[in-house]
Image 1 (cartoon, one colour):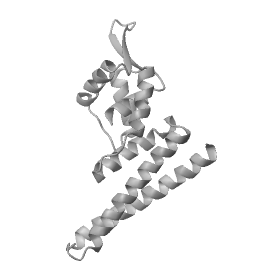
Image 2 (cartoon, helix red, strand yellow; image 1 turned 135 degrees about the vertical axis):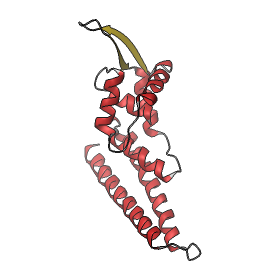
Image 3 (tube, one colour; image 1 turned 30 degrees about the vertical axis):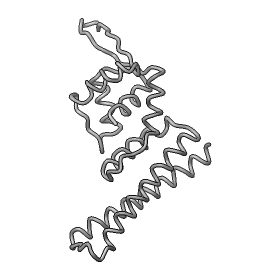
Image 4 (cartoon, one colour; image 1 turned 45 degrees about the vertical axis):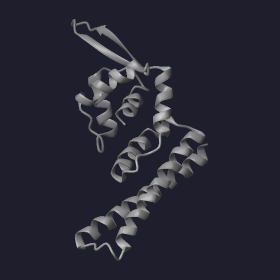
Length: 174
């Protein structure tokens, strides 16, 4: 997801590595907090794939700054990352879905519809699995586990409701 976040923040303007991290934290900070140790290799990887370019600029004070900008390949890569299937891991799904939803304005029409459908179907799948655990008579669930599972089920319900709102908005504006 680091590649997706980097490409997304570069849509608006060219940024330095420090500014890339700051913008990522501004947009995704409540559920993603990549370090410079994660951002730097991602920038190198994206540049090798020709998704971004870098240019060195000398400031008035004589300091060299490297600015990154998205390329046409980067726009294509961002779309592919947005439409990429989710991990079957429930925790990874929630995290990745939140990131993709924060970038949803990049997609339009059928692409946005497809991404929202993918998120909703995965949320339903994870919700059903959670409720199955709670109702399985052969899997004893204690008080604390039941509270956590109930909360998780509510979380998926809220997520599904949110996606349905996005779908309605997409239909109105599509």
